[in-house]
Image (cartoon, rainbow, N blue to C red; front, side, top):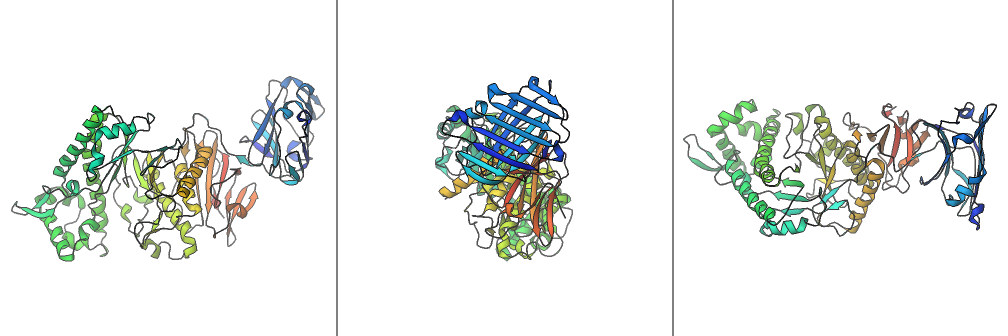
Length: 616
């Protein structure tokens, strides 16, 4: 990647590259200028470091370091000759840059066509000047020629990390027949599937997996936990009723015993794990109770309220005393009481899940990285509605199970379409789906510095309900969701992939390749400052990598359109949003990603601390 202090040379005049059959005669000549950026040149003499670089359109680079002792000054220009390495001329200053190479270092590793474009860069110290020849008159393996004027140079993937790098890991729900080392298959177990509760089989499954990536995945919607027969409500007289109550002490004991027995067998067989991933879907929200018939629901709510624990425990925290059936069950009465109930019960049930599953596992396995599906923190200041438009996160603060938050990025749209996206046509719903998913991801880092996982569904997943649709499915907005999740700070993807197809795996691998090239640095710092506006036609998410920032900007485009087709200016980088609106990166530079996994967005890099993108 070009230095953050790169100056663009826009007055390139001529470029010629020759690679004849006799490789030792390979040559390149470039003439740039007059260009105002080359009028004054910092001394390249010792102790300064200087270099030349040639890159093709995909970013494939040939970098040549120059010997500082060989520079000679001639008036306003500096001249460099090193015939022994085939550098027959470098002349820079007084508004011009001329270079000529023949044989030597260029012949050892030439730059053949087709190149698509050629960038010529000259650097001294921490600054560089670069010209991009894009008007190619010839672009063949043995010959490239181009004329000016030149364009601003792109950045190129991969970006260099300030420290160490690591690939984005993925844990899959179902096995994937793909050797990609980033895909990890946990042992999925549940009391509902007795065959999975054999600890020795789990130990054998994980024994060959790399340390740090061995995962157990507990999946349960068990009634024995959340609706245990011994956790029923008591009447005012203290007699047990037939109605379950949200005090789950016996359910915790039952589930902890089940998991404890499994893990004892697991450890006795030599098993070890690094992660505990959970998909425990045992809600006690208003929908779980009000889903019964009207009469049964009414009696159930009354039974909860009649239990003496309600008055001692829940009522003071809820902050209202009106009968539950009239307030919480009647969710559309305008009181918002159901939101308060749901927020409180989410926290309570998460604590029960923590005790039953996570604490039991840690007692046997030691420290674990752990998360539970859809268990994260939220802030009312950055609340995102659910797919049916309910503003659940406008109250409370959420809760986690384990060590990490875990949110979903499925992009499902239900009745929220009738409120938040009512002005969007069906053709615009894939972008709306992506917008909803990325804002749901952003809720987590905006609410807490606690690290987070992101659940993703296979690209072709149609959803599990007829009127709740992940409109981003089978579009490039699916890949864009992964890009933005990674930039926002996700530490891993948890992949819901039952019945996946080969095309789903191909799309996943392509997206992971691009994520790792763009921001696979362990020292990255997400730059999420708020939610994207529900009305805007673009989303930009960035992260800091040492002295640079990398951003992904995604546009609301019609089918078949490309984000690159909306490029207005390269410096400053701006993109056309239509209706005389544009998004501008004041210090941004287009990053060339070679063969992109998605066409509806582009990568942008800029120096750390630069102004963020804005619409105008």
